[in-house]
Image (cartoon, rainbow, N blue to C red; front, top):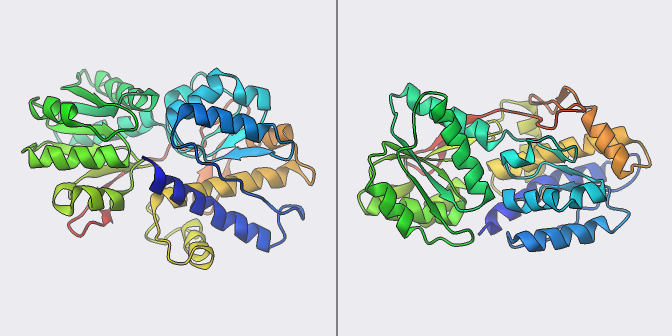
Length: 340
C-alpha cells in the first residue's frame, strides 16, 4: 500500500547521507542507513524496531511511516526502552505529539494542522458542508478528529463520515455514503491506492463534491491510478514548501544532490521531506560529538531551537518536539502536475 512512498522516503534520506559520507562523514565517522520493510504492518514495525534497538551501534531511528505503527512503539514502550530518537516520521498523527513524549522529533506539521488549514480554506470559499473519507485506523481517526475540531471551532458539523479498511482499496461503501450525502467538499485521510480508488469510483458515479487529501499521497500515482480526468482538481495539503521551484537554498541543494546521487529520480514532496529530516538528524549527530550515544543525540536534537535548514527553520526544545507547523494547499492541474 505504501511501496512508492517508502521508496521515495529512502531516496530523500539517502542522497543527503551519501553526500555527508563523501565529505568524510560526521566527526570522521561514516553514516550507515539500515532500511527495513514492515509492509505497513504494525506488528512488523514493532518487531523490526526492537531488532534495531538491540544493536548498540544504532544511535537513532529515522523516517518511519504509519500513525498506528509508530503509536504502537509508544504504547508498548519500545522507544522509551530503547532510548533512541525517532527523527522525521512520515505521519502527522496527534497521538504521537500529545501527550508529549521525548522520543519523536517531528519535521512536519500534524494532521490537525492540515485539517485546520483545509477547513479554513474551504470556509473562506463559502463551503460549509464538509465530509470526511478516512482509513479505519489510528491514522484515519486522527485526521477525522482534526477535521471535526476545525469544524466545531466554526460552529459547523461533519456533513458525512465514511471509512475503508486499512491495507485495502475497497472503498465502495464510502463512495456510496458520500455520494448520497449533501457534502460540498470531502477531506480524505487516506493513502495512495485507496485514495485513487475513491476518486475514480466517486467521479465515475457522478460525485461532484470538491475533493481534498492530506499530504501523505503521491499526486503522480493518483493520476496514474485514477486517471487524469478524475484526479484533476484534487486539492492536497502540503507540510513542506513547494519543491519544484528552487527558490530556497535548501531546495537548490536537494535538486543538486538528487541529480548527483539518484539520477532519474523525480523531484517530489516525499523525498524532499525526508531530505529535510536527514539534515536535521545529521545536525543532531554533529552536535552530539565524536562519540554519539542515543541520549546525547536526543539532547543534541532538542538543542536545535531555531535551526535553519536553508530557508526553512526547525524549532525544538526540552518540551517541544514539533519542529514545524507549515501547511499550504496545492492542486492537481490539467496536465497532471501539482500547482501552487
